[in-house]
Every structure is written in structure tokens, then in C-alpha cells.
Image 1 (cartoon, rainbow, N blue to C red):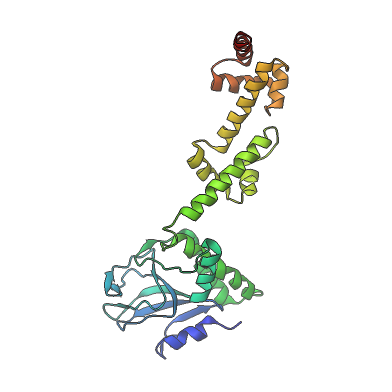
Image 2: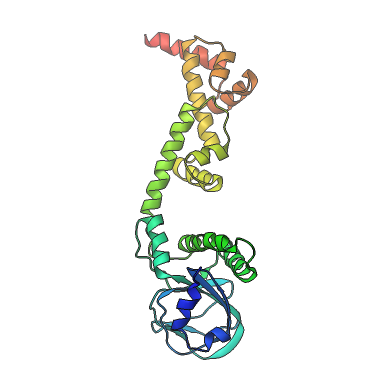
Length: 292
């Protein structure tokens, strides 16, 4: 595996490789450094800085930024940046990602390759720091199969940065919103056709290719109900129709609508409709015959 650091260090002063700790794959290089420099520089790659506590002021395209520990600061390819003074600091971590690799994943996720990160200090998602330190550990220890692990971490780190660091694509929520609406529609269709089936939230989320946590959040956002509440309403609506026909006993209706037993069905029905199934059946039949 040809290390990206070999290419990257051609953009650095000759002595830099000797004063930093380097962790590299073929697409990503991560450094541990203690010195910052005031010479203006623009790298031909994406750079993400995890600052130390006592970092000097950063200047990107003549605009000043105060870097904060536990946050992440992105710099785009060829953006000229520097620090307002040279100094030694506590250990900080810059991450360098090949431009073409970042754009490839941007296109895969959004259909657009023109990814541009907003400059500034952004809250760092825990997933980013976990992946970064796992990458460093694998690159340093080089245990059996580490090359394959680094290949996986390449993509995981890149996707996590695209998702969690502010950029021009994340400002456009329309593709994601459309995807969410389509997923909710599929979930509703699934629930409608599986009223009596035995399935879990995990099963339903997996059906629309969402994590359970994200799925339940967007489902409630778009419907005002949890999937369980929505399913229960579907069951009760079906029960009301069956009760009105007087073709089935209440016990039969409860099973036809996916309830465990008549008692449970009656309790839920009364809570949601305001009357017992028996009372509803009689009132529904009365309305029907009077209408005829």
C-alpha cells in the first residue's frame, strides 16, 4: 500500500516529517504535531484540525478564527491559511484527506462532488474522534490485516466528516427530505399490509434502510405519531369497519386486527374511540340502518 504521507510531505518543508508523528493509509494521513507556523500555506487536499488548548489564532483567507479544543476546524483544498504566530503548543492533530477521495464520497452520498466545508470551529461528533484514534492505533501497531482495517476506516472517517461537519451540501436538505418522505411512505404501506404480523421496530427500520433511532425520529416528525401509535390507529380503524358489519364476534375482530386477545383489544378500543367495541357495534349498526 502506497502511503498518502509520501505524497503529502512533498508539500511540507523538508524537516517537517522529522518533528511530527505520522499515521497514514493510501487516502488519509493523520499527524501528531506540537509546532504551528506563520507561513501562509494552501494544501492540495482537505484538512481537518483537532486543536490543542493553547493554539494561536488561525487565519484563513485573511479572516481570523479562534480555535477551540474538542472542536474540529476544516480547511478546503488550496485555501491559504496560517497562524498569527509561530509557537510550540500542546499536541494537536491535523487530518489530511485526498481531494479526489473526499469528492468521490460526496458524489456517492449526495450526487454532487463539489464539496466545500464552511470554515469555523464546529462541535466534533464523538464518532469522528473514535474513528480517528482507531485509525492511528491501526497505522501504528500494524497488526495482521491492518491494511484492510485502514481501508474501512478511510471510508468511515470520510463519511462521518461529510455528515457531521458543516458544508455546502449539508445546507441543502431537499435530497434528504425527499428520501425521508419516501421512506415514511414505504413504512406506512408496510404497516397497512402487516397489521397482524409479528415484527419489531428494528424490522421496520431495516425494511426502509434506516437505523431504528433515526427512523422513529423522522416518522414522528412527518406523522406526529410513533410507528407503534400509527399501527394501533390502523388496527382500530379496521376494527371499526368490521364491527359495523356485525359479521364477526368481538373476539374474532380482535384477532383479525392483530390484537393478542379480546381484553387487550377492548381496552385499547375504548381508550381511543371513547366507547366499548360492543357499544360501538350497536351504534354503528343503528346509524347504518337509519341511513338506509
